[in-house]
Length: 248
Image (cartoon, rainbow, N blue to C red):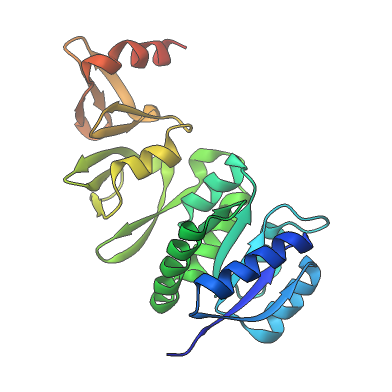
């Protein structure tokens, strides 16, 4: 089996050394072909060596990890961002279905993230996901952003403001839209709640995550009416908080 050509970019020498050591110990399918503490040098290495996978720190001087990605002519490689906790960065990455690791890097998480990246490399989906991340980072208005939804057919790239609500179905999620047919995603409703709950989405029921922008009416018997005549139950233990949220 051919090993995956990998480049490491992190301005902190110690962090770079630790990551390299962990990859060599726990990820035998990766071949580290270059490493650098300079994001500018990283750009040159990517262009010259054409890696399949790049580990890159987000917070770096002069150019951050997103800047590096935005300056690559054809970002058709898989990326794993490595970062200290930064909710904005993690949200942006999650919308685009791109991998990330939090510092300090956990061994099991590293292995799982690399396995997922290896599958993505085989699927050749990196280019579109990277383009989407760059596009989203340049948009200030959240509702104009897009999200990647894994489905049976592949990856769906959809505008967030088109989502009416997400419905949990046997561990999967059925996503209802205002302008297209529903999509059944392999991700659980918990996944979508995690990345959308801070952005005008509310989990009114354990199986229903709604876009507050699509609410038309609240019914006293415990339902909300949404766009396209969707009627969704609000669980008893969430009703008061939900109503307070609407009034606030």
